[in-house]
Image 1: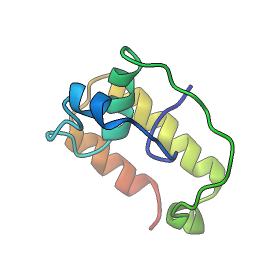
Image 2: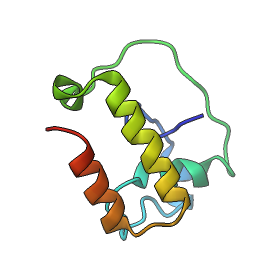
Image 3: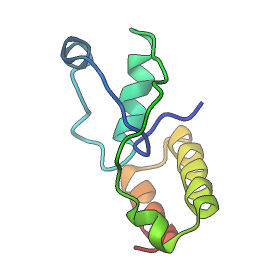
Image 4: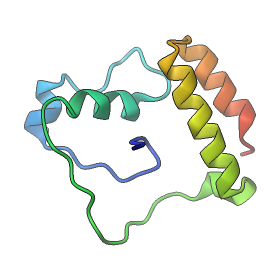
Length: 96
């Protein structure tokens, strides 16, 4: 299961506060990190329905290219590579 910024995430304010919100030292992958912590405190549910999101990264990159970049990012994050390295990789990997 992947849980990151390419989704619409809802979290209650009490849980967000209990988790102390987003980590201010993170440059990228902050949603992934927050949801990773939240999974230890609450169940999540996949909601049906449509939402409007930005499709900018898909205007110049295929769906596969974006998914491949996201997969690589998760692998790099789990290896505890520096935030600056992750950010630079993602910026250089996709066209904007």
